Length: 349
Image 1 (tube, rainbow, N blue to C red):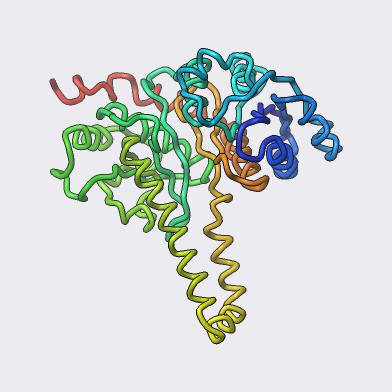
Image 2: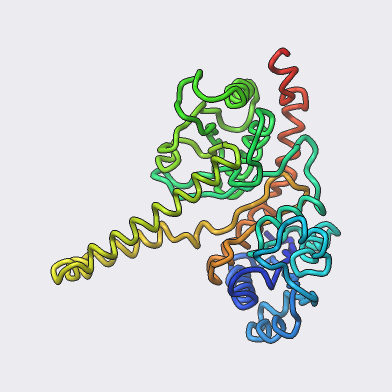
């Protein structure tokens, strides 16, 4: 980590921007001392915030942006009219080679549309995918796609598996990841044709680790595999279900421990264990969804996160940069060979 690298930040993206963006960058700077930052946003608002953190200011530059992409903006409109926006300028910095990655807590659809337009996809990849990771019984698991591609064919799913494998190795530190395809059952004959074709192909492709086969919804929390592959429609529903269930249990715990005097006393006794549980499941620890498959690093932070959450999103980008994730994805596809993932040839059609 001795070599410095630069991350472009959309300073105006998110519910509490630019405050949490600057504070988050200051937190991330301590973990990644080699990082440099380019802030894109309203200079009159960003510069005074940056002045509060001398060490951060020394490794940062603020570039003015006339406006910001709004949450309600449609991706197509943002792509047409957002050339001078903080989000677009931050992405452009990656496209020009001024930064190795971009992080934004702004409009997800707009960020994906702009990033794909500016950065383009890597050779061998037809569609980028949104990937993120979750706590499980065994550690952490990455899942993709989480909403970028509602409909996917077998080739898309195989590409997601390759990219998720690299994410598991670079961000999660798993040396030999196991990969599974999310399905309605674990038997080989279950699921629609695209799932079965993807499964057959992945059994033939040699990646670091192994292909587990089909997994079911409960396998996500079990941590049965390190990489869960699915289409964006199913993945987004699974993601929102996981988030909703976590909130439900948090509310159940709150209501239970406040229901009586003895319950409140029990809460005091259990507080150390509950604090450890809260830390283990804190969504800020897992903030930062990455758009895999592009020629540059693009990370989407949750729009409502705080400074710690945004710092962790920066950390995802930094880990991808430091460990050369883009080069690894490119190398893996080169090793596999284009013919190995072409559905007609591989399926003998």
